Length: 117
Image 1 (cartoon, rainbow, N blue to C red):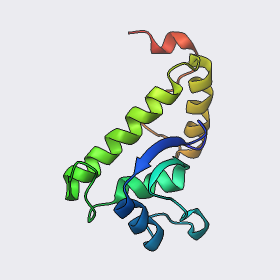
Image 2: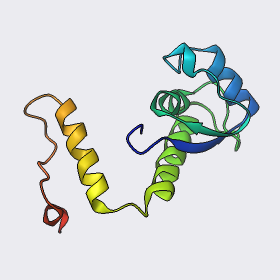
Image 3: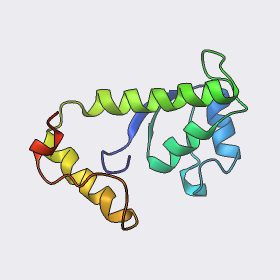
């Protein structure tokens, strides 16, 4: 999330209030979201995806609401980054691979041709 520069998401007043008052956003200095449009970093986006006890704007709660929030984050990330080149994402994927333990099940991607079906 932070690699791509964050994501723009609109929050309801209840979602913003909940995120600012709970530890769903792990770093207290990031608990500054507001009602309406927000540019979320990785910590804030993860906290947003974790919400279960506050309904979404479509009044979805519990796991349904959590799933809907995850889908909103993924779709917003896609829409905001679809114009970037494949090289950008390959470099990001390599950075992620370095954070994973040895023997990870993720494939070793070294070149664009590795994406070919």
